[in-house]
Length: 337
Image (cartoon, rainbow, N blue to C red; front, side, top):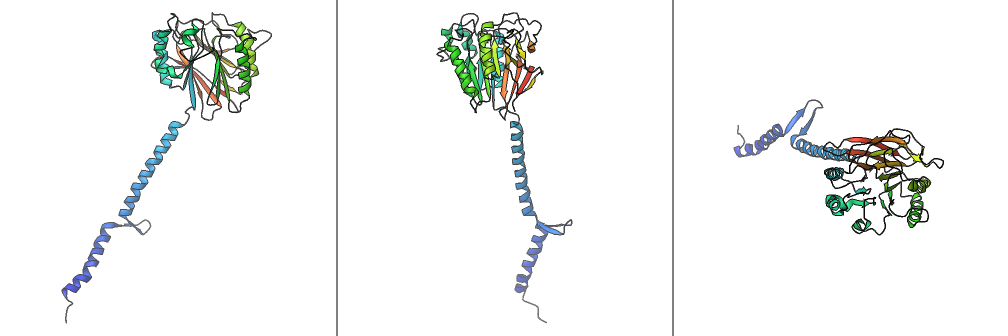
C-alpha cells in the first residue's frame, strides 16, 4: 500500500488547519440565537455605535443648554452717579451679557460727565440714553451721536421709544408729534410684538419725590391708545413695579388697575411702569405702596433685566440686586396669546 506523497498531504492539510485556527480565533458562538458573529465586525460596529451615541448625547446637551434661552435681553437702570455702587452696577450688567443697555438719566451728579463715561466703558457700545435733570445735554448728545433727546429704534420684535422729560413735551411740541406718529406707526407693524418706552422722571411712584404730572397727563393716554407694554423710568431712587394700569381721566393720581395679579399677566390691557432708579446714587425711601403698585423695594442697588423668550411673545422681567450673589428680588412675566 502506497501512501500519498508528503508534499501533496501538506498541500491538502494546511488550508484545513488554517481555517480551523481562523474559526477558533475570530468567531464566537452565540447560544442565545444559535448564530455566529464576527468579532472584528462586531467590535467595529460597537465603536461606531459608541461614537454615534456620543454625538447624540452632545446634540441633546446642546439642545438642553439652549432650552429656555432668550432670543434677546436688555438691561435698564437710571440714577447712576460715579460711586462704588455704580461700579457694581456695571459689573452686574456685564454678568447679564445684554444686547442692549438703557440708561435712564442722571448719570453724574458732580457735573463731570467723564467719570461716568469711564465707568461705562465696557458697555458703552451697547448703551442708549435718555437725559435726566442732572445732565448738560451738550456733554451727552454728541458723545452718543444724538441730534435730539428723543428718538426710536427697533431690536428683534421690539420697538423702543426714548422720550425726554427735560425738554419741551407738550402737545404742541416736536417731541409730542414725533412720539404720536412713531407709536401710531409701530403699533400697526406686524413685525413688532412689543412697544417699550423709556424716559427719566417717574410719572407713577410711591416715594417721596413728586410725580411728573404734566408728562403723565400728556403721554399716558398715548401709551393706552397705542398699547405700550412697558414704560421704564428713573428719578426716584428705588425699584418699583406697577400692575398693568390705564390712565384715569377723572383722577390722574389714581390710574385704573387692569390686572391685579402679583406677577404674571396674560394679554394685559394696560402699561406696566417700572421705576429703576437704583444705579448707584444715594437711595431714597418708599412710603406705603399705592394701590397701583405691585412691588416696591427701597435701599437696594441693582438693575432690571428684561428678556424676550424663544417664541417671542412671552416677556420676562426681573430686578437683580448688585453683588456677588446677584439675588433676584422681583420677577414678572407678560404673555400674549
